[in-house]
Image (cartoon, rainbow, N blue to C red; front, top):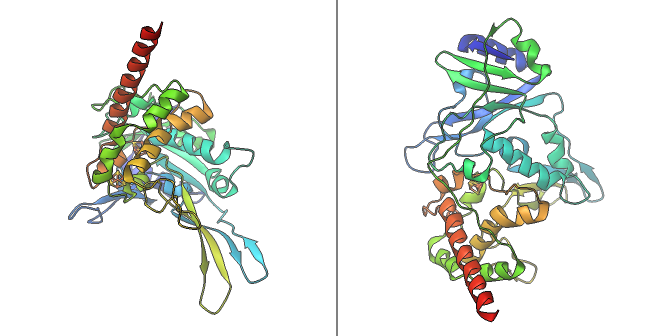
Length: 352
Ligand code: SF4
Ligand code: SF4
């Protein structure tokens, strides 16, 4: 079912929707970019369709809407503990691109299907989410969603295409039909990007023996000088899910406080530091090895299917202050893996 809705009329519909939903979309924050005189595009609540930045990629992913940067888990006093709650009055509409919608599926797997226990703090916000897909008719710089198979999705309640002075809207979830009843009917089925400028080859690691050789590659050492271990790549990533827990005491003389979950980053120097000061990944290269394999090998190895954790949004490539291209890192790893495989094949033939 499709409609044409003028921007003016869409603002009225947004006003109606806001009675029942909080609406989040990518918004422009003037002069807040990490480079001088640049803007920041990140997710925030909107009141008007004119606030939605649809023709640029957001710098931050939509995950901060339902997996907040800092989230209170529980409150404690000296002898008591109370679980936190969330504002339950409204559900959430999230405008998100196809790669990010696929990224939400990756986070669902990590938080809801990873062991016997669902993560309640994730679930209680995730359950509120209704997705309005922002159609991508062309990819942006650094996108490699097609290589990652995350350029398409049917996992949305509604889809929108921005046109001059209005929008085409497809409604899939009947919950939203009443808001668009009476609008101009128009055939509209969203399209998906079928090719990106950036293409990535995925590594084919087919045995533990190959994995061990990958682990010892010299190639990782190149990152020891290049990577600053700043963690910016993890922060903008749609699928990075690591967190730390912090106990915050309200003042020096009391034991009252709260426990928060805050985003963390596998690229930070102290991420693996344990009691006694022992760390398991002590160089930037070792951390890059962990991140890369996690994104294009470990997740798939653990959960099966044909999905990798990385959805090819390319945000980490744009954000890296050292211009380290994660897409090129994946392709370079694939070349190294191919070399390992052909050397193994050659040595097997010699011993026959
Ligand atoms: S690793 Fe980079 S390209 Fe892949 S999902 Fe994360 S930010 Fe996007
Ligand atoms: S790859 Fe780039 S963004 Fe990521 S930790 Fe290293 S320097 Fe920072």
